[in-house]
Amino acid sequence: MTNTEPGSAAPERAGKKQRRVFLHVGAPKTGTTYIQGVLWSNRSALKGAGLHVVGASRGDHYRGGHDLRGVPYDPKDPRPDWTGAWDVLAGLASESDAAAVVISDEHLAALTPAQVERAVTALRGREVHVIYATRNLARLLPSEWQEFVKHGSKLTFAEWTQKIFNSRDKGPGKWFWSVHDPVDVIKRWSSHVPVEHIHVLTLPLPDADKNELWRRFCGVVDVDPEVATEFEVAGNDSLGVAEAELLRRVNAGLPGTFPVWHHRFLGRDVLATKILSSRSKGGKPQLPEAVRPLVQKRSEQAIDGMRVSGVDLIGDLAEVSITEDLASGEPIPSDGEVLDASVDAIAALLVRMGRMRDDRRRTEGKLRRQMREAAPMVRARTRLAGMADRTKLGSRALDRYRSFRLRANADQ
Image (tube, rainbow, N blue to C red; front, top):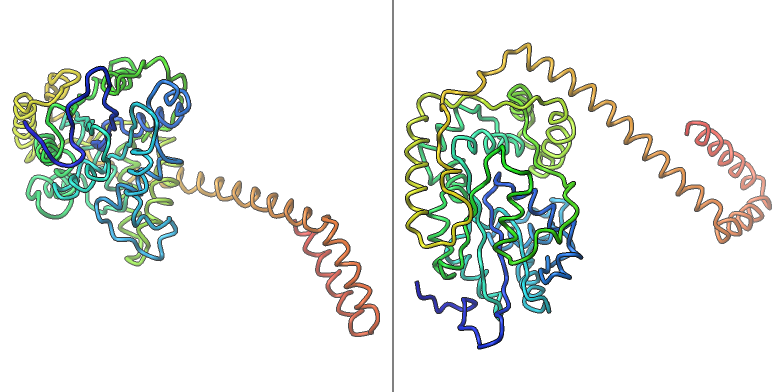
C-alpha cells in the first residue's frame, strides 16, 4: 500500500535510521493496563535504551486521546481540560531526541479516518507505527461487559450482549466494535499509515508466561525486554459474577444526576477495584445461547480478515480463535450471593472511610501544628494578643477563642 499522507513513512536515507513513533492504540482489555504500567515503571531505563515514553504520566496520553477523539469536556469535571492536549503530546514526541517514542492509549483504536489524519499530521518528522492487540472474542465479551458496568452501565450481561450484536451503529455496540473489530481498526488506521507499519499482537493464552505480551511488544519497538526490571504494576482486575452483579445494581440505584467522573473514581477505582476485586474468586458469566453462533461467526471473520490484511502479525491467530465450549461459564448469581457481596463491600467501605478520616485528621493536625509553630505566626499571635488585652472586649474575645481552641484540640 502506498501512502503519501503527511507524517507517513519517507524513504530512509542510506546509513541513517528513521526516527519512529509507536502509537499503542489498544484494544481495551488486551493487556493495555499491564503494558502501560511496565512502560511507566521502567521509563528511565527504557529511555536509556532508546525508547522514550513522552509526557509526565499516563494521564497525559489519555488527555491527548480525549482531545483527538473530540470528547466533550464538562467544566464541572475535576480533571484538567484536555483541549489541545494531543498537539502538546505530539510536539513532545516530535522534539524528543530519542530514536523511538511511544504513546499509549487504548481508546485510540476508535479514531475515525479524519482523526487518524490529525494524529499522524501532528507527528511530522517521525515514521508512524501503530501497535494494536486483539484477543479471543468469547473471553473478551465478559471482560468488556464488566468494564461497561465499572463505568456505570445498568445492563445485564444478556441485555448488553444482545445490544452488541444487534447494532454496531448505536449504544454499546458502537463503541465496542470501534475498538474490537480488528479489520475495521486496520482499515481506518491504514488510511494514513502504511499497512506494513501496523503491528497486530495476539494476546497470549492464559497459560503463557506472564511477561510474554511484554516481549512481543518489545519485539515491535526494537528494545531488549530485559531492559525493564519492574513488573509489579497495577492491573485491571476482573470481578466475579456476584461482584459484577452487585456493582450493576448499585449503578441502577444511583440517581441520574450522579456525575460520570464519580462513576469513574468512586464506582470503578474504589468500589470495583479496591473493594470488590479483593473478594472476587474470578469466574465469568455464561454467554447467552442466542449470541453464541454470532460470536463464533464474527471471530472467524476477524481472523480471516487479519490473515489477508498485510499487517505485521506478532503471535499466532490460533491464540484468538475460539476453541472452548461457548456454553461454559457461571449462571446469574442468586440474591443470596449478591447479598453476601454487599455485606462484605459495606464493611470494607466503612473500614476504608475510617482510615481516610484518620489520615485526614493526622494531615490536618500536622499542618495546623506547623502553622501554629512557625515563627511569623507566633510573633503575629503575640502582637494580636497584646492589642486585644488593651480593651475588656478584646480580652473576652481572646478568652473565648482560647476555650474554642482547647475544645477543638481535645476532639482530635
